[in-house]
Image 1 (tube, rainbow, N blue to C red):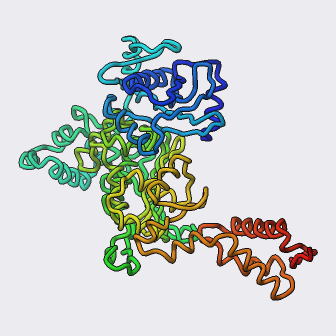
Image 2 (cartoon, rainbow, N blue to C red; image 1 turned 90 degrees about the horizontal axis):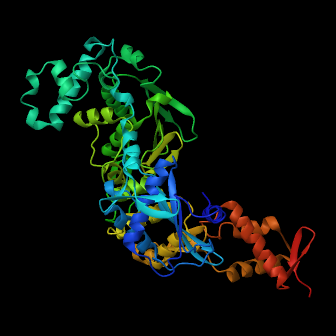
Image 3 (cartoon, rainbow, N blue to C red; image 1 turned 90 degrees about the vertical axis):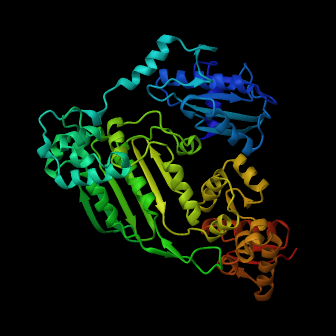
Length: 547
């Protein structure tokens, strides 16, 4: 979403509403009142069926931009997310805080998520709402409207009325018992005396002995999958080569408790050997940490929208990537929000299934799984997990190798770097765009240099990590150096074609530039020399100017 355009759309509205609030906040703003607006706008977005609401700082009541100096540093803005989460129910916080540099001043677009279904958002224990532009308590009727949303049918708890215990796999039940004993060691002594029916009830896989979709999904025989139609209880493993061509594949069906383990064993978790870097790095590690594989796979099983009829895919690329995907929107809204909240979700798509998977030691509900995945990759100096959240699909890619040695060295040399900063540096190594505020923050710490969008490792960190050669290759030389090379080429041979000049300079320009950017750079150098009267074009040749 282009934030310049979003700001203009908000300014073009007829005025404030239940889901849009403008505040001047020229220098500061009362934190308590900000929190009340957060609660109110979040609840109203839920009631209107919207994904988010907007609190805009730096705009007056007449919808004119006046600029704001509220929390001018990136670090202060990021800390605001935690401060808000600390005082809201279920630790809800901003989806994102966007900074827009408008001609009339700096504007902050505080993007507030809609209250989760069934969970009205409270600020310091009180629920707030909006009546037009007015801030006030959320009415009891509106509180109940939101709470009633959570009473919708849970697909995973539905009874398969004609199914019986004969539809379940003996192998899967035996494995479920072992995993239950691991998860609940205090009950391990009683477990052998329980009948299968008793065990399934206590593990919350069945409901009073009745067969649920959850127990078919996790423990059902392959031929029992028809009870789940039109849902597809399918896990697909696909191996692709470096060109993206399929080399091998296998599909797995019920029981997913067993199938998930079989798919795990299909993944070729090869050893990754680090380049010789003294004592900075270990000699070798597995490409993928076992926790990350199981967390990503089991999360896909737990949170898939089975009513969409899709399947879970695990694509293994020979260049050292694993890609997990499943149908269904990402309910928390954003990965950043999950990482910062580091708490259980307030709502699950398949609550009954999720509870059963907890009891079978497949997942947990403390809400730290995704954050732990990020921290594991950080400790291995590998790129962070990359999420793609489309409207009806969640995809996460895990990279099992060092993508950029400069990035890896920074993590090794600066072990106390905050996770927020590492997330931004991960974007730099993946050549993803940064906002102006993020760039300012990283440059203030001396972590990056360069011009937008071509940022690279900074001199400060280069000296710290003894990466001086890579730093020079990334940074390149100043323009006068390249101009001198062009002049020397033309003076020596009398003239030069553009192809000759390209051949001279392409390998000498900064490594962070792609081929097209290098071509544009050479074009600009030639134009600058021409404007200075140093060289001139004669047909397809460049020669020294006769002026």
